[in-house]
Length: 396
Image (cartoon, rainbow, N blue to C red; front, side, top):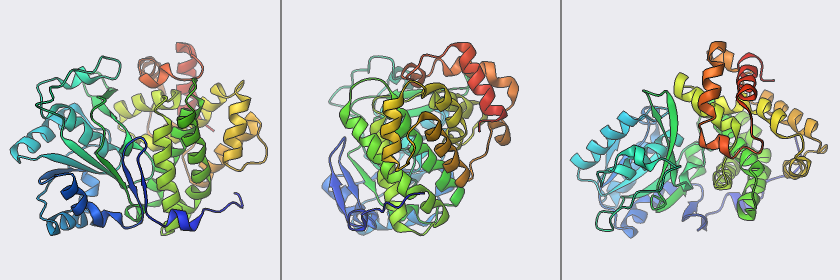
């Protein structure tokens, strides 16, 4: 796709960053988790992950490293790909019964969201719904603070490791809601690209596309935030050099590292907000339990065809960051479609069993999503329904 190369000495060496939280990056740094816990005065963390991760080597390795540093731990893994409110309650009980003092959330975005959601409510009597993003954050007594949380992403996609927000699905409404509190910021995000080696190519593609979309949507959100915009453009630079190689050469640690850093930066970039790729995807995922990154990737071209005309300057800067030659809107969208083809993203939501008759309902729900409010163009219900229907029938 391009002739630009990653800087090997940068990507394969340890790095410590402090924006927007403390970040420890580098291949093999999971081995430091015991000393990290000791430095943070963490003695008995609850490890929160998802069911599919429990059989993977990094869980046993994590617990072994903790044990060698005299840190007790236990495991909670009843987290769905789209975490539910009832699962959060079970996790809180596990935390209390085990007399835990902190959380280590390890896995994909669902595990990290699950860990943050438990943190929000386990030490207080505030209902989870009171932490909705659009509400004023509840006042929490300093005598009963939120638990410390360490986040360890094992996919390069969600960027959830530095975030203070978490998505939860409410089954009754069939909707996802964004929960947060400014004090639930990870004590440390540990980013070790070795943990993504062995991730199947389809999950590498789906999570990698999610990271790409975070950077694109975050950059396109209106408003002046040069730090977020800089993070978005550098994320696109790294992802464009790394994603295809990570999918096609799964043991390529350089590509895995580029994706892991790119994903983290993309997660930082959407502190500004997201757009209608996410507002639609959130509600499709809530109803049909589809993989978030895969759903995003399918919807992307449809929303870009709606959003990008009239945004030529931003399109040019994104296109330059991704080393494309033709910086027009049409060419940029075609290049994105080529990328999606190359990493084998399905052409429609219908291919992952999302039916056409849900289009109106999904559109109405999507307009209540936080990401709808920050989309660069305000779409009507008819326009939203049309985008959902296009995504179901033929997105590209």
